[in-house]
Image (cartoon, rainbow over all chains, first blue to last red; front, side, top):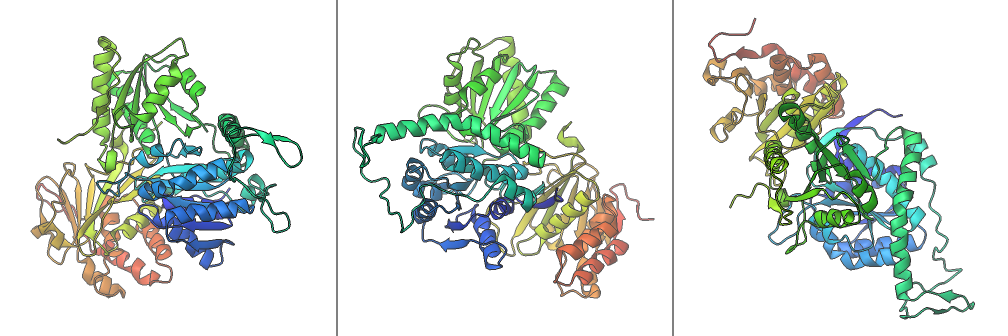
Length: 404
Length: 197
């Protein structure tokens, strides 16, 4: 194992992409993603990474280049944030529909208007239905490990993977992490071979206009129409949860880290109240959980969700069966309804016998500070009120830290 | 097991954009980590820094992994790279009672007494020049004052990490600046007695 180093989250991501031997990088700079692509272009210019860096004029083109590269059987990577992600939205659907194993880091940032460079999760949440796999890292080690595992997953299931990490909280913060050594990474992530790779010797037309109904191809084999192809994407996305778990086990055997690829529970076993959150906020809640248990004798746990799409409904619902209350804290929402994650969790619990009382909290939009003290106080108040006199199920989210 | 934030040493750095506070905090983070502090987190101010304007950087140091990445609001120590910042920013905001103010100033320590706090001063700008640095390079020197007042990390570990960070950019002079400042640092506490032996 190599020695730990102290670097920023963006550099951690770039190091993982270097270790993964990505062959094409196409990216357009946007805060707070920019240092990832700067670092990758430095590595390529210095001859430390054998890849083509394509300096594109927009995020739409960045994803288009990745689509082209991946179609030719080349390992492709890009990174973006916020409005950049939205600008490539059309191409995101295309990459997923075309079943191309692209990996992208999304350095999560609020979406304008009004303009904000600070962190929340609305960028990723707004793209949850593109057919991309979405995973969320909580610290730099997870950025590195998840990015490496993401290439493996994408190439096994032929579905693109979005590795999300919080802008500034992770991207610009320095902390120790252990970069895996290149030899082990090469064993874990062999060179990518794509059996449908485009070559001039074997020309193919891919993803042309596809009729509503299934039909016979030139060889007389029945081929699906649009709906059948999309059904396959949905089914195989669901199965990729299990593949992700297997990849994590292999990674753990090689590198000694992992074990919580889908959900990462902390002190949840005997918890009456379970908090659910994604990204760095889930780690912040560990401190809150410790305080609530130590100072107030409240049995609270935090369940970090590592994989948001495909949504691991059964795994989450089963993990929440012994909780009396579930507090969903999130940095994004479905405007006019409720938190997107909250809605997903509520839906996941519907078929199960135990349906804990659910509470929804919206926090940290556009970088609004999330003081640990305020998380502690809101949790303490919520626990004391609701554990004594359970309120009726209310879906309206509570907003943490509003100033008007 | 990870415990409450009280066991995390929180250091807030005040400098000007371009002055190198982030690099200094990173050097101290490295030195702390190499000295056995398993948890270090260094976070610059999130967002829009401008050259010359007052900026802050947060450094948290702990014996175990740090899970709380929220910005520092109640520091144990504040490090001020430029005494003129005192006229623009309340560097004591949130500082814990008895906390340290580590200050680069040409003025004597008696001129920088903050009720309820401890002060450590050195003329880091002058000592940097003495060490062979260009005038105005203070981010490595001030690390010596922090090391002296806090006692958190050995000066040799700090100097070694400075030399590594500044490889190719006057590593020896930068390390020397920290050593000179370490020796020259004067300390004073709020109760009115010199704590310097």
